[in-house]
Amino acid sequence: MTARLVESRRDPAMADLDVTLPAGDGWTHEIGPGDVFRIVDLEGNQAVDTLFFSSRDLDERYSATETIRGQGNLYLTTGTRLMSSEGRPLLTIVADTCGRHDTLGGACSAESNQVRYALEKKYMHNCRDSFLLALARGGRGMTKRDLPSNINFFMNVPVTPAGALTFEDGVSGPGRYVEMRAETHVLVLISNCPQLNNPCNGYNPTPVRLLVWRAG
Ligand SMILES: [Zn+2]
Image (cartoon, rainbow, N blue to C red):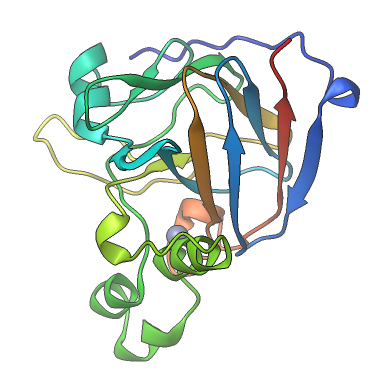
């Protein structure tokens, strides 16, 4: 959809949680209905690979297919409802100063690094391992099979008229953010992408700021 640039009135000083996630790190956090979650691209051009699960039933999880079908568009921005595999909204994007986020490009992995770039890239830090490490630290016993297609906040993956995907330079810049309201009990899973082989992080992964305002 066309970028819907909307600023938030929420004050970071009033946030109930305010953490900085270093480049390449993973993170999990649970939020509840009405809580508002913001991701800030502190230095610009940083892909933030993200998944959402219903924390009351981890088998219900973010679905790119349901999200795209629900809004009739490939790109995520203000107004997008992030849908679950059961066709229910998990969160709604309520503010966005970047204007476009990807849900087609997927997360980088040891295997994709090897296939796309070079054999010796297999051992480079990657998002799928960060997802799994963050889940393991949370003790939830989830595995690779629990990782559906993800969202790449601040990442630009335009689709050509012929239907091809291209990984382009980011459309984001320093301080741009995306903010979403939880519609239910949600487990947030993030890998702050460490990728160095394509322009998704401008060849320089950087930290992001994560904020939560509790409902009421
Ligand atoms: Zn990645």
